[in-house]
Length: 410
Image 1 (tube, rainbow, N blue to C red):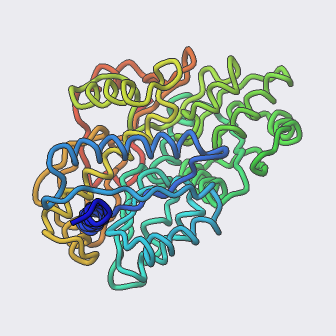
Image 2: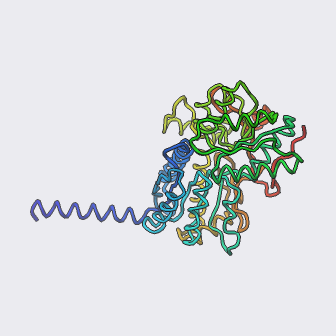
Image 3: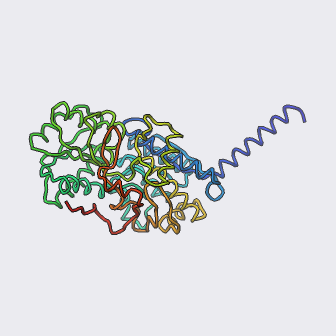
């Protein structure tokens, strides 16, 4: 055999080995905004997913196979999300997909997974409708391990009206599906307390001047501003209040914890409060290990995860899927779905320990007893209430009876 023949044989063997490896991997899609205004959530989620995948692969993978992540940037655009879903299903042949940061992208895209009978684990998007989009169908392939807005909105209202005693509140929400569905949830939660917002204002993504909306809220006598939006526009609300010399508390959805709110708002963002499933503090051995490994692996600025909630829920989502694939003994979509709906063994995560997190009729892993209130303080999110911090080492587990916000006596 001459040199050329040997070289060709070596190349052919290498190609065959590569093809075999690719065929033997378990492909999982990762879809989220890795650029643009939502990117602090998307990148943090992706990093959490990568970290969990690396740990699982180093431990031998699942069913003796390595997990291969197929990452796609949806740019927080519905049409891009639709394209990616079709590509991941038809070209990449993924066994499942994790991600979705933006409610609108999730609602536009996940119908393709439903049709293909491939599970989706929403690990950040919180729109209440996400896991109920296909309630009219006999089977549902859409799961979630994030605190949905029907949990968050009542918590926000409870914080503003009951805990802090505000009589007049304004709502400022962006024009996306996320903002407007969240605004509806806030109004429903307020109505249950016989309260109506004194001002309800809308703005668009990339708006930089909230003066008109804030003046209406101020003139109506608002004592607090309730928000449903993402970081950059939330910062414009805080900065707008500073320019007007009008400082009232901001209480909103979990996105007030985003780095691009905290950094862009500066002192104007101090004191903002929001529901959180995870706060970057080493309150359990699992959380301590997660934080140490994340900071070591990705080296974020100021040793602060841009979006701790996104990172933690992204991390947990992979372990939930891995547990289901292992239990199913298969990468077949219907079998993974069935396993998720009846997980036999608890899954230790960063947010919680998932013990029977899903059933055939309940595809939300997080219930209202799990989130706590965070507060922006010193350019990071900390526990808003000392009692929550004292009890943070106690794992809050799913309570199927905790349908709405916790009832807190004033």
